[in-house]
Amino acid sequence: MVEEGAPAPVSRPPQPGGSSRLLDPALAAVADARGRMLREEVATLVAVLDWCAAHEVSEAEASVHTMTPGLQLGGPGCPWVSEFDTHDLACVLGRSPDSCAVYVGNALELRHRLPRLWARVVALQVPVWKAFRIAEQTQQLPPAGAAEVDRALAPTAHTCTFAQVDRTVASALATHGPEEVERRRLAALEHRRFDVHLDHVRSIDGTVEVTGTLDLADAVDLDTAVAGVAAQLGELGCHESWDARRALAVGEIARAQLALDLETTTGRGVTVYAHLRSDSDVVETTGSTITTEQLAAWCRHPGTTVTVTPVVDLPGGDPTAAQALAEQVAAWLAADVHIKRVIDLTADLTSSGYTPSPRLAEQVDLRDQRCVFPHCNRRRTDRDHIQPHDSGGQTRSSNLARLCRAHHRAKTHSPWTYSNSDPACSSGTPPPARGTPSTAPPNPDHRAPHPAHHRCAGQSSRPICRTDPSVKD
Image 1 (cartoon, one colour):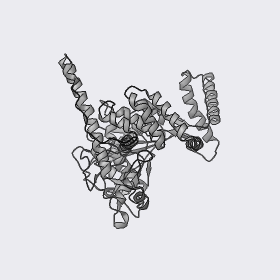
Image 2 (image 1 turned 90 degrees about the vertical axis):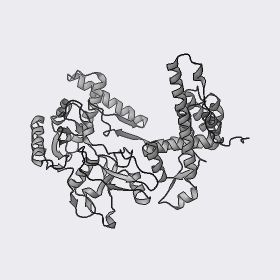
Image 3 (image 1 turned 180 degrees about the horizontal axis):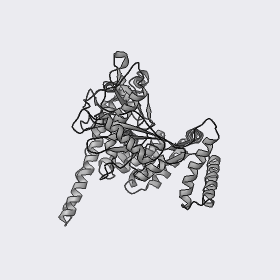
């Protein structure tokens, strides 16, 4: 018999067999497939929890051994797991590190703090995704609050709405943690932010999302300013819609603000990379596909500074041909263009000292484009010496790769190692460094994204755009 509030014992999911009553064989096959999927999801969840139990660390160990820390991924009271071991789990699950951490946190929360809901998940009465949606919300609650939500929602979890979940969690937080509610209200003032998502340019149209959390007074002032400039644009003859004029107004306000500082250069700066390849020539400058017209509009905007960098992607590529391609691009743009020297992605450039030269850094950034760890897609990265510099590793192309901060730490302080493959390969894509853990091999099919992935289908020489301010030395 299970004690009140104690985690339900791990059991294997039952075998639903309702599909046999369906007269339509095709529909019965769908029902059988869905039943197998639900059982496999629960089986995976149980296996992950078994893995967590095998890699549990105490809070004391996590605080003492700071170079091999533990993570408390669930709410208060959930066990801690080894941070670096989660990288192995992420590879096996085929998830990014962030996605794996969220999955493990929800699994631990469900198993250890929501026993009633856990029992219904194991019995295939509540789908895993629905239980995770509740577990994600309850991680912010103290143990008594999580227990209250479990009692309230477990019986109806299979039918409750997200709004009901949010209301129940908010009520539990107000009841069991009023001081936490006030703390969060004050902390929210420190979490105001304004983000322009330049690393997620929308395909084809060249637009980006802008999000932010502002103080109410600042938000009102911003809205008033944007509305005022949008109205002025309409009076000056702009025939765009009101929403489009508001979007244009933000750029006008930004450029006007820059113009107030006489030492600040106004206008845009656009770097265009002209890639010479055997199959097609590609022009890029933002990492996402946009039209030739959009690229030309950016580059021909008054005050814009344009730099064209020719890039050779394949071993044995002709630098002269790459330079000629860059000159063709510059002529097509019909703008004031500066053409830089050719960057050969297959060349093994070197730099003296620890910090790579700007040219070497740009080559590594163009070659790898994001963290080279298996399944990791983070674009905010460090340039890492594969063989540590203080152990004799040189600062050169073959010994540098991009790693996000989490995997940089894992490589430095855990058994994970990696090496750089031979840059010459049949596909013509310089392969990134590959990770090799001590316990589980990485996905051998993983490659860092390459500019070829951004080509427009059926239009091999159509210009596309890339900017990447996310790399740190």
